[in-house]
Image 1 (cartoon, rainbow, N blue to C red):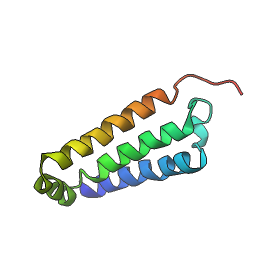
Image 2: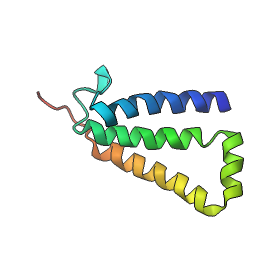
Image 3: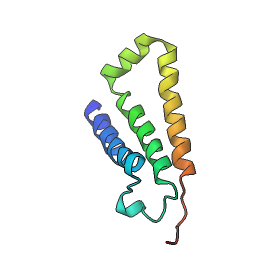
Length: 93
């Protein structure tokens, strides 16, 4: 399970980092995302959440107290909001 979460985390972090840094989007999303940097922030938040769900890291987050868990879920919420605000309709360019 942890290998799957790591793979999903990497799959979301790499395009998210590229979108946040360079404004690059995967070719299949080019016409649908209005604000690529905001979408990249959302993908980074989702990737961070997935990677911290790995059992070995999960125990460290639980040991840190409820504040660390709240931060992890806060990053997920901000990431999902950023992805929702980044577009979703076809853009004519």
